[in-house]
Every structure is written in structure tokens, then in C-alpha cells.
Length: 195
Image (cartoon, rainbow, N blue to C red; front, side, top):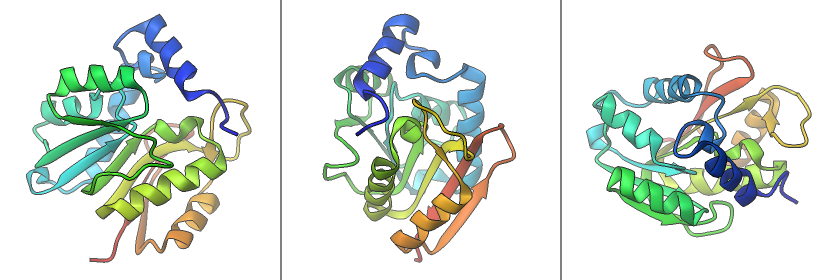
């Protein structure tokens, strides 16, 4: 069973906060941007050589942030399960947005798969499936941020380094890079493939 109903979780936030960081259940625009900045620091400097799939793209904020920082990829594909997100992200980014369940559906190929926060409300089984599908579909690496630690929550999904390392081992990840020096209870991780 999912930790919570994903559709209700996001739809109620959109209704309450609109097309803002809080509308996709981030604490603030500043914390969302800090997570995006860490993602950019872990990606190649020249993104124009690479394609990116944004797993759980929400409103397309990651793409807009990449645009602002002049780090736009060769191709950007947003993926989200919610039709509301699809419509908003399509309009805001002008990029290809796909409606898909990342845990179950066939995914478009990309050099990098990126997920910022979309796994925070999944259960352990769904998290493993999500990571597995993203890592198997990417050509270079899967970069994600999640809530970090051994806290128990009825709503949120916290992962420990031990859990992340075990998933990486199960998936045959060639290299795992951790960044946990930017926000309390948050980690950004790169699963790299051997090239």
C-alpha cells in the first residue's frame, strides 16, 4: 500500500497554494531551489550534451531553474502521474511531458534521470521500483533527493544510507555519490552506470 494517496496529496496542495513550491508540497521556494542547486552541482557542467528525464516533474520547476542557471539539457522530458501536473508543466516549459506511473510504466530513455522529492511519499517497495525503473532506463546516471534518516512517518518516506546502499547493490550501480551537507534530513544521491 502507498503511504498516502498521491493524487490527493498533490491535488489538495495545488488547490491550497497554486503553482508554487508549496503547491508541490515543498516547505519553501528557497529549499526547493537549494535542492535544485545541489542537483546541478552533481551534473556535468555542460548539460547541452545530455538529455534529462525529470521523474515526478510536477510543474516543471527543475527545467525552469536549469534555464535560469543557463544549464539547459539537450533534451528535457518531464514525467508525472497527475494530469494536472502534465498540463501545467507542458505550458510552463514548452517541453515534452509524459503522463506515466514511474513504478509501473515503460519510460522514455534519457542520459540522466532526475527525481527531486517525488519519492518522499512512497513506501519502501514503491521506492525500490521507482529507483529500479529510473536507473535501468537512464544511460549515464540516476540523480535523486529524498528525505534522509531513520525517522518513522505515516506520510513521509525517510531513507538511510544503508537502505540506499542496499538498493544500489541490488541494481548493480557502478558508483554511488552522496551529498548530505545542505539541509537537515535531506540527501542527494547519484547512481552512476559504468560507461
